[in-house]
Length: 559
Image 1 (cartoon, helix red, strand yellow):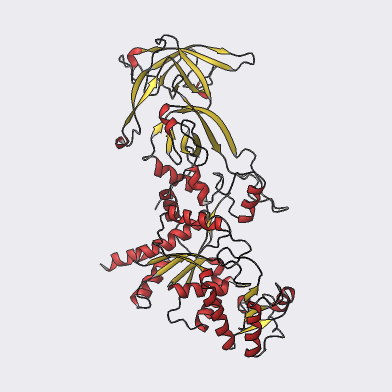
Image 2 (spheres, one colour; image 1 turned 60 degrees about the vertical axis):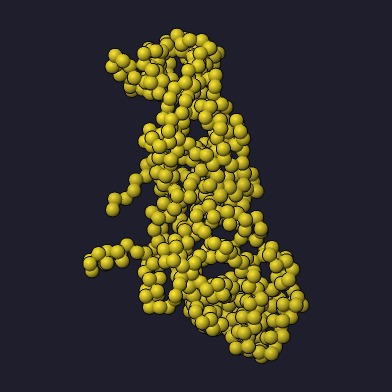
C-alpha cells in the first residue's frame, strides 16, 4: 500500500501537492482559485492553460472557481474584451457558476486599504516625477535612495491622498507609494507605487474615480476579498510575491491567500503578443482577433478546434516550474485525435477537373449507401448521389504518369471510392495544355468498389457528382509567420509575415455538406479536417476553414 501511495503522489504536480498539504494541515476549509484576466485584448492558447489549471484544481478538490476581471487600467480596457473573455472561458468548459467579479467593484475597499496603510505609516504621497522615481529606484547592483517626501506626516499624506481622489492634481504629478525598503535586493520592494492619478473614464465605474490602484497592490486585495486561497500565476510574478505577501500582511487579512507560480505555455512559431496581433488586425493582414491563423482562443474556436482538444493539449503540456516551448504540431495532434472518431468523413474536391463516364447512362442519378465514418459505425450512413459526370481532384490524373503513380492515367483502372472501377480512355486539353476533361468507362459489376472477378486495383480516388454538387469556399491555412525566418525580425522587431498564410479555393462538395452550419466539423477525404466558418457560412453556400491536414509528423513521447 505504501508503494501505491508513493506512486500516486509522484503523479501529482507540485501545485496539487501544495494544496493537499494545506488541506491536510487545516489551513483552509475549502480551496478557491481564480482566473484573473485584464480585459485589454483577446485570450490566447497560453491563457487556456491557466484557465483549465485553475478550474481543474477547484473541481478536483471540491472548491470554488472565480472569473475575475482585473480592470484597474482604464487606458486599454474595453467591454468588447470582457465579452470575448467570458465567451472563451465558458467555451473551454470552466464554469464560474455566477462567481463573476470585477476588480473595479472593489475600488472603494482598495481606497480604504490605502488609507489604512497611510495611517499605519506604511504609505506616503510622493511628488517626484516618473523620471525621478526611476532615477531614485537604483539598479540590480545598487540600492535606491529614499524620496524626499518619504517622511511626510500621516496627516499630510491623508490630506494629499484625498485631494488626489478629488481630482485636484494632474496625471503624473502625485503617486501613493508603499513605504518598505529602498535598499531591498528585490526592486519590487523599493517603495513601489500603489496608486496613480489618471483622469480617465472607466468601462465599469465611469468617471467616479480619477485615481487607480496599481496591479501589484490591487491583485492581493482582490484575492483576499473573494476568499481565494491559492493565487496561481505565471513565473514572471515570482519576484512580485514578497510584495503580494506584504500587502495582505499589512492589511491584516485573517485568511491571507497564497501565491504560487508555474511556467507559462509557449508555442513555437506563433504570435501571441497583443500589440503584434493588434497591428496585424489594423494592417488588414488578418480579419480580426478571431482570424483562424491566430492562436487566440476565439481564433482556434472559429478555425474548428474543440474544447476537448485544447484540454488534451494542456494536459499533455503538464505543469512545471521550468519554462519550455511546445511545438504547434502537438496542438494539431490533439485535434486530429479528438475528431477522427467524431467527424463524419465526406467527399469534397478542392481543385476540380471534370470526369465523364462515357458508358454510364445519360441523365441518370443513382444513390450509393456510404458509411459516415468507417471507424465509428454509430455515426450511421448516408445516401450519396452518383452520375455520369463527376468532379475529381486535378492531382488525381496525370496524362504522362511519373514512376509509382497509382491514380488515374490513360489505360489505368482505379476505384472511385464507394462506387465503381473506372478505366481512363482519354482526356481533353485547352490551348494552353491544361486538362479540361477526362474520359473513362466503368465496370457496372464493380458497384461498391469491388470486382466480382477478384481483380485488384492499386488506386482509390474520391469524387463528387457534378449534377448535384454544391459549390463551397474552402480556406487553407499556413502559419501566419515565415517559419524559416522566425516570428520576429531581429533588426527592428517586426513580424516576418508569411504571404501565403491563406489560400482560398472554390470547391465542389457532396450535397450533405451544403447543409453545413457554423462550427460543423467534417473530415474531407484526403484533404483534412474542416469546419463551417462562424461568420461567413450561409445555408446552401458553405464556407469551410481547414482545421488541420490529415498527416502529422508529431508523435507522443514514450512513457
